[in-house]
Length: 484
Image (cartoon, rainbow, N blue to C red; front, side, top):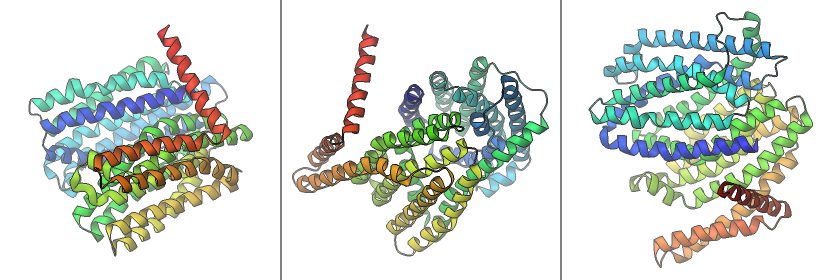
């Protein structure tokens, strides 16, 4: 798991590095309207992708098979079913593309929706192939494949945009990227393509997958339902601010969560029949992740205005408090809500995760509705309060269903929360004292104070010292071996 997390982290890191560079180049070649059109297309395809997959990938990674023949039968049935479902959804999109485009307010891009819809078939095919590699902890191979596909925009999208293809450059670039992934992954998969669907196997998969699909739908509606509510209750300006802050928060934290959670799910799935090892894995990963993600959340809260100014510009500063508070609560939610969801799915209980998400709906919408009566900052408070409510629900489920100790979970979180909070306090005070001297000097000094204070505070505890020095020794040995 440690080795897989390393490659998963490198994948996320390189993606975060390459994608913004590509985006900056395309932003200078294409108009904002082109990106707006592509965003409208992605709303359609992202929603349809959930139904095309139907949770089969999660089932394949989670399930323990009796032998290789059963695994191959499951893969073939899942692949054929998801591709057929994707083809059917693509057909519906093609037939009703004009109506869909009109509903989105972009009637002129009906052809783009039809063409981009073919990506559903490719995505379904690619997803099942990737599930094989994830199940076998082949994240090093996935890293190499991702690096190849990340080069597609440089070879296809940017040249098409340069020659005036407009939003079609984004559409064709996306399809070529998905097609290249399909071909390259197919070379390494080694699984035969099925010519028929095993109905008994399909029935087993659907009992798991439909609950996973329901959870995905509820999360989608939470996100877009919240946007709809904010857009209805407030102005389009605040809707843009709301969406921009959510996107920025997700991007800031996904480097850590995106690297750990996929590996975490596969590891727990392999331990699902040994609950003692299952729970110990949960505690260990949660504690180690907390040492990284909680200080990141506190850091983003303290320096929210700096981060927003750098990433989005000065015109977005009204969302500073929203971004900082959302980053702080999201860091906690990753450790409780996200980890609990993966644990429940790994144990074959996706229905509980889906039902807990349904309990989140009324609290979220009430928080947004009530907050919108006062201010945008109050909307942030309502959103984050609903997030903490979901954490509480998931914590109770972990205790009652999986037998996880709330005390052990809280010890692992508090172990990082107190040093992170202390470092944040000293950084905040340092910046407040020095801000009258020179703002940039105050920011740099506060950042250094945060880093030094956090390291000093976490090494007070013996287990943290062992973990930190053990990690440094591991890196030193790796550097030494690479130099040899």
